[in-house]
Image (cartoon, rainbow, N blue to C red; front, side, top):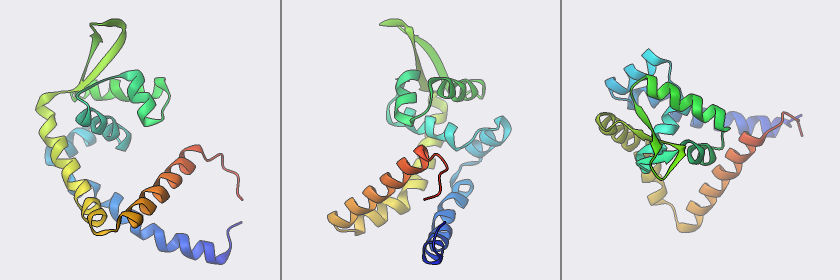
Length: 156
């Protein structure tokens, strides 16, 4: 069971994290928001699009590895995005067993704008940190993300 001091510490952090997630809708273009709302897309779908923004074409297997998701979950996300008209899937000409996924070019500007808006505050803060503080910040977030992903529900 967390101690009262640990509970207070978590309660201090929650509003800081909530501000980032609550702002997501505000940072979306009307086109982006409407696609998400209409097709029931989630933050995980947005993460797929982010990877496809950084790398124009990826295999479903590579997306799965980068996102830390099962191949079936990743395939489902890609299928949802394909039905929504945001990505296209095609056979890899070098290996017909592989499926390559890429973002539809007409949606790239909306995704670029969204990523720019979402990342601007973080990049601004990181620019103001010393190299040591930046490394500590990234290390802390990385450790937390791994813990959340691997958490089995046991209370310390």
